[in-house]
Structures are given as C-alpha cells and as structure tokens.
Image: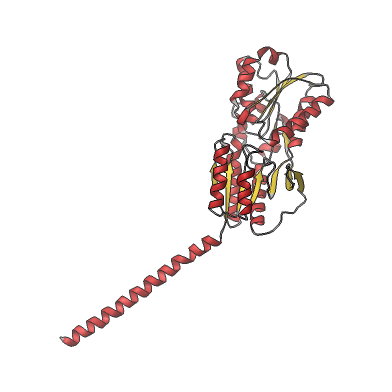
Length: 348
C-alpha cells in the first residue's frame, strides 16, 4: 500500500508539472500579440463632425487604407465643438499615437494642442482644411481655388455674364472658404457679375442659408444665381427656393457631390457640384500618415508647399472636377461614387 501511495504521489507531481508547463506556454503565446500591438502604428483622427455627408466616406476609406498599411486608427468626432477637438488632440498625445490627422473646425484655433503633440514627437496632418499658425507636418487637400473657379465658370457658361449672384458661403473659420470665395469672386469680376448679397454659415450650419433666403426674398428674386459653399448649404437653399416657387429658375452651385446634390442636378434644381474624389484623398492621406510616422518624407508630383502663417508646409494638392448633368454618368456613376439608381431615383 505504501508503495502504491508513493507511485500515486509521483504521478500527481508529474501531472502538475505538465499542467504548469502547459499554462506557462499558453501565457507566453498570449504575450506575443501584445508585443506586436505595441509595435503597430497608431493614428488618431479628429473630425469636425459627420453632418457633412462626405466625411463619413473619408473616414471609412482612411481607416481601411491605414489598416492595409499595418496601422490602427482611433477616430473621434468633435461635433463642431472646437474645445472638444482640442481635448481630442490632447487625448491622442496622452495615448502616445504616432500621428494625428485633423479635419479642423477652426483653422486658427489649434496651435496650442498641436505644439504639445509636436513636442511629444507626434506627426500632425491637416486633412482637407489648412491649420494656420501651427507647426504641422503636412496639409493634404484639393485645389480649393480651383473649386471656386469651377463654380464661377459654370455660371458664366450658363449665361450669368453681366448678371447678379448671391454668395452663401461656409464657415469663415474654415481656411478653405476664403480660398474658394476669392477664386469665385475673380471669375465674377472678370465677367461683370454683381455680387448682390453675401452671407456665411457659421460652423457650416446649413440652416442659416435657408433663413437668409427666406429673409431676403426680394433680393433673391432680383438675382440670377446663388453660389453655395457646399452641397449641404445648397440643399437648404434649394428647399427655400422651392417654397418660393423659384427652384429650377435660379442657377445654384455647390461642392462635394453629395447624393442629394447629384439628384438635384439630374432633376434640374441645381446647376453643378464639384466632385472631389475623396477615396483618393483619404487613401493618399493614410499613406502619408504612415510614411511620416515611420520617419520618411512625403514625395510625389502632387507635393508642393503652402504658407500657413507660421511656415511653409508640405502640401499634397489633388484636382477637383466639375459635375453637371451632361457628365454625371462619366464622373459620378462610372467611378462608382454613386449608383445610377441612386442618382436618377426621382427621374421618371
């Protein structure tokens, strides 16, 4: 009996050692992914808001492209609150991300948190909206002056020379707004067009556009066209015009190629929009963020510089495209940006 007890004790000890060895092996296996996670690049991305339709598309393409390049993206939504966006940048600094990509709310309001990010060795990219007077590593956007030029040229091509136009712009805190409007105004001046009225939608609040149209009916009726800062603004303008039975009688411009804008162009209540291939922009931005995070520099035929009030910043500039009814299929549908069924939904 004593021998049997000894045998049982030895067997139990061996079994315990085997289990312990197995448990240690499993713990080591579990630690490996943790080490890999530490090595993985992380990118913080702060959006103004997702009220504008296109930002959701930018987000999805950027996140997917970054993932394909081996990086993870932490997306935050500031909901139009500049103080919240500052807190998000501080949060990314505390998280020790490798790069921060910002769709800014206020082009002049982020210098302080960006300085903290730069002091921590984090790369900072201004996405689609230039950040002024701050030490940023890259600005990537479309040619915003070309956007304004295309808006103006479309109106002139449709008989506005010598006419009257109202400008319903976006947020004056958005650096792109002044670029778009400046280029548009130059086209108007060259063609003797009178800018009869002007308003800005603070914070890109599109409802301010319809309020202006309702409050200035006589002025609106005396004009031939309305330049809108983007398609969301144009949506409010066209709705207000429809109430006054003026939809389709006035030339209306926009930008971003939102689905509803493309539908309005097909229906004849909006003249044009400016298509900015956001998939190309978002993918290029993801590539740049990874390249900069790994210590590289951004190069290419699309790279120049822009002065942001503090320094010359590397600037990746992509070309926008005018969209009208005649090229809708070629530019929007054939590219897969929107489907034929979506664009012509209301056309019988």
